[in-house]
Length: 244
Image (cartoon, rainbow, N blue to C red):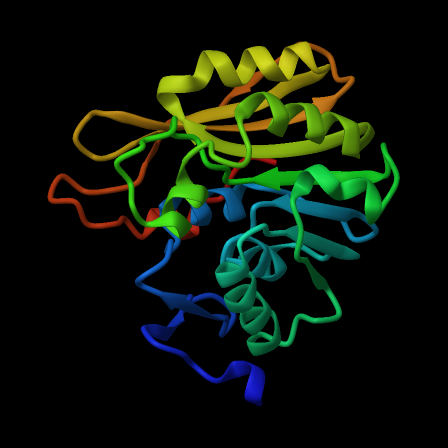
């Protein structure tokens, strides 16, 4: 198919899950363990509609398709270069019926569906503060709060969700207090959470499940070690059975 013609430094990689594959371009932002962790943790039920904020290559939604039976995932991606790759990946994995790419800023979501109509929201958002020295614009927008900051992320999530709807985030552990504060301020109760360890004793990420209008009682899950001491990814990262 013409839409799947690889360009420049694009390459196809095996996701090692249900024969799923992913096209990536090393010149742009490529997915990390954050995406795998989020895809393993989130839960979407058969009749539910979900929104991914900042889908990049589409890897989280694509992996989620192997672990969840859902009605539809709508991916919002603002960057044109990543939109093209995401579109190819949806076609490559025969997921056009299940995953819809919306080529727009999440702040414009009201053009596509009403307030309070979404069952699940999930995101591996840009969680670094803006670094003016980063000259790669695609990576900068994907990793830093250029187009979407934490306050807007959580505010928009709350707006989109139905009462009782769920959201899942992976975020920098250094900003855990900010993340939890914004969730609580927007009536998103933290229900489950855990941290990740990079194998050298450093806590790197916080992963949350929140519920709109939920009670303030959180289940803290065991820390997930993502790497061995020599930096290699652990197989447990892919196979861990998260508590639902």
